[in-house]
Every structure is written in C-alpha cells, then in structure tokens.
Length: 320
Image (tube, rainbow, N blue to C red):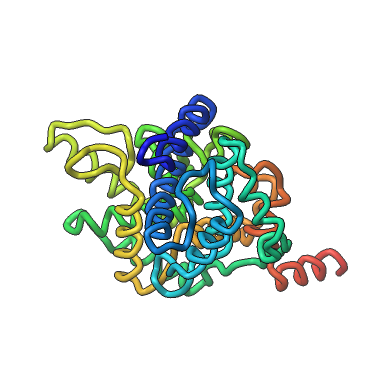
C-alpha cells in the first residue's frame, strides 16, 4: 500500500464504477472522496482515528468521522450540516471499505440509532405569491448592460422556471431550447440519475421567465460571436468557454437573491416549479413527467399537492 492508502482505494473504486456511471456522478464521487481524505488525514493527525486505510478502518473510526462531520457548518454557514448529507458520505465511504472486504461502516450504522431511524420528511416550503411576483418582475427588469445579473436571472429561469436540478442546468445545451409563440421548452439529455432511474426529458419553461431567457440567449450569442468562440452549454465560463462549476452557479444564485431580496436555492426553485404547475391545474401525471420523476408518488409527496383552499373549492363545485 502506498503512502496515500485512501487515495489508492478511491482510484480502484472509481475505475470500477466509471463505466457504469455518468460522468457527473463520477465527478461528484471524486469530489466527495477528496473531501473525505482531507477529513481523515486531519483526524489521524489529531489522534482521533487509527488509520486512513479503508481496509483497516474500524467502527470506532467511522464513529469519529461521523461525529466530526456532524459538527461541520452547512454551506451557507447558518447551521450545522444535515444528517442527510452525512448519510451520503457514509454511503460512499461504505463503498471504499467494502471494496477492501471491510464492513466497518455497516457495523457502525447498525449501532447508531440516528442513522437507522426512519425519519419521514415533511413538505418543505415553496415560493409564495408575493415572492413569485418579486422574482418574475426583477428578472424582467434586467438587461444586457448588466451581464452578470442577466446570467443570474437566466439561471433562475431554468431553476424555477423549468424545474431543473443543478446537474441538469450545468449540462443544459443552448440548441435544445425551443421558444415559439406557444411557449418555451428545453430538452435535457443529461439528467439526475441518468445512470439509474433518470431518463432524458422535455421541461416546459414558465411563461413569466421566457423574456429574460430570450434576452440572455441573445447576449450569449453575441458574446460568443465577439469572442470568436463556440460552446454548446447554455451557461459557460466566460474565459474557459466550458461547463460552469457548481461554485460559480452558487455565486450567481446569491447575486440574483441579493438583487431582488428573495432568498432561494435550487431545491426550493424545483419544489416551487412543481407546486406552481399544480396550482395552475396541471394534472399530477404531467407535473411528474415534466419534473423527471419515476412515478407520481414522489411528485405528490414532496413537490406538488393540491392546496387546501383549491380542494375545498373543487368539492363545492362538484357537490353543488
């Protein structure tokens, strides 16, 4: 084993998974493993774990890693990292250890009640009518003289306006957007879960965001022409002309959020997209299909449920 046993096992696992996973999934795995390696090296230096070698890690080592991760601040620095995020770390860490025929993660999880408890998630908030009005008005007031802000609101047009996930937004291609008098759609070839449950889909873009998207696409075309460059992605690095990094996208979300005064993230945008479609009486099967869900169960449980007042009014309409 080399001086860097963790990295060596990671390379073996990635080599095995690479042919069967999408490039985006592999990229996320590598990023997570790099962060884990830093954490384990630090814990070893502090004497909190016995090794950084997945082959020889013990349940006690995994417990120390778990406890340290639960102390970490969240990305927005406003709270601690979520248990769901740590669970994802443990899933990938389990891959490494089991690759070396070590069940230490599984043993630790069996002894940790917080990980075996089946916590039912509640419905998380969506944009209210006032927030939707603010977002759409702000998006339609920005013009190409403020290119960074224009890009930020164009991303919002696909995040909230199209219900895209971050991996889908990063991989979205400009020539897959179709805008007609009837409306706008974007075809997505690369979607979340493409290597398992996901499949390419078309997403309808909410009408309120079509104007800002059109202005951005015009600016984008002119920028590429002036730069004598080409790029297939809707959003790209202005210097690299390649796919944007997640961190750059987060900065653009923050820029638009600070400009209009409405805080949001990609997940809230996606939830709001599904609920908006349902509120406007689109049947749940269509909402589920547009969002790329395998079934309507996920759509109904977490993304799009008929509001109480609409259910009451529908009942009145039918009964009377």
